[in-house]
Length: 448
Length: 79
Image 1 (cartoon, one colour):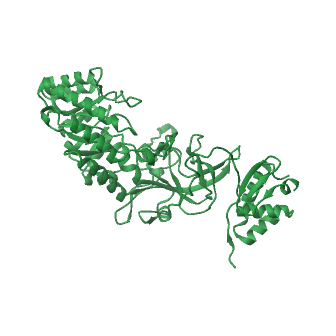
Image 2 (cartoon, rainbow over the protein chains, first blue to last red):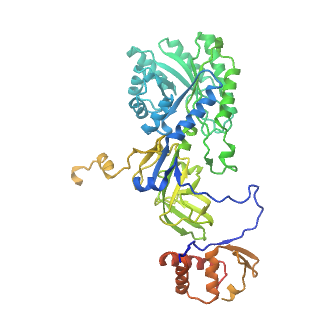
Image 3 (tube, one colour):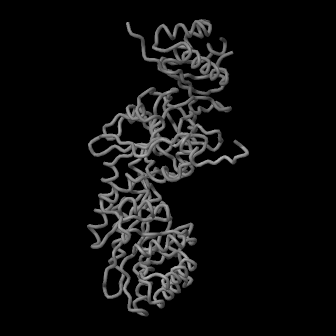
């Protein structure tokens, strides 16, 4: 006769209190597959932990976003925000779908060129553009979004040396009701700095001012703020036309759309509170059509949203290393993926699931990563089933910023795989090994 | 044993501790262990009984048992 299935003994105190309005937590359903590929098979072949990206989700999300805007406004262009995830395979999927490249450094610029993006479809943002970066961008007719006066004067000097006319936009910052106000990037609208910058550019006569750019913040859940930004940019465009008879070709609203990851401390889950692409599109396109642009010429609407386009497509699968009890009796679980891979865990309450049903019991648990650091916490307090050492877990919505902000601390960064539309798994970034680091290091002769 | 016997334990794992008015829940394995504790079985005997009835190795069963006993002691539910 076969034996009964074993389940670890559990004892939980019944705590009295006012029940919250959402009732008790639903049982956490395991996630065994991604796009019909077994997570266990991926871990067995590519190791643990492993990042998994879904091409299907990337394309579907992009199409949803593009449809939301293009059905409401005639001229819409997305530019893929490289810093959100600059793995070449990911960038190329977005480029295939029609997105330009939005880069913020010389490194990202080179990646965009390597991904076969023509220079005039690369938007070059950010405060760090070297003289060499600017020369290359000017020669390639890239769209340079000027961040500060020092950059503007470097461009003005370069105009004398180069034959090309720089194609530029200025980044503007302003009060849109969002706190904190991002005023460290670009020229301020309210104090007249933005208008001064436009004057310097257009009175030079050898620089083409094509656009106005704003990026009001990140994880913006109040879509109305974009409408405020559009009104102010339209006023700036009208003033520019009155003075210089120059129309603005495009308005770049940057990114900042929230993904469905819940921020720590939020009362409601983000899946209930985050505006949809349609919500953002409705507010933004309504504002774009309501304001009066000079000559009634509708500028192209450029969007650089990153997080909301790729977060959903990324997963991190791994293995439980240990279970233990903390001093006060609370349960702690140690997993093989920490804040080295999930820097974003500092501000998100990530959703984490077991890969298999192991227990019907759950217990308040703190989930720690494997690093020798006290701050290496993936979830502080989550009602989680009792997984055993060696069991697999998977973390949802990790496509944005993890694979660009990850740290190499005490261990190697893991493999990243992509599941294509046919369900085939491709390795798109190899796990690091000691040779990767040995190559970069030099030992002085006297220490050999 | 005195403390354990003073608990009111239902068949589905609800435990009431009359001395403090506190309530607890436990699972099937917890009930199984409490029952054996009441029969004055030693740790080793309980582990063997678990292994006889359930699909588990000795190390896991022992580790989980002693963690469970720590809980019972911490909550003043056994001597």
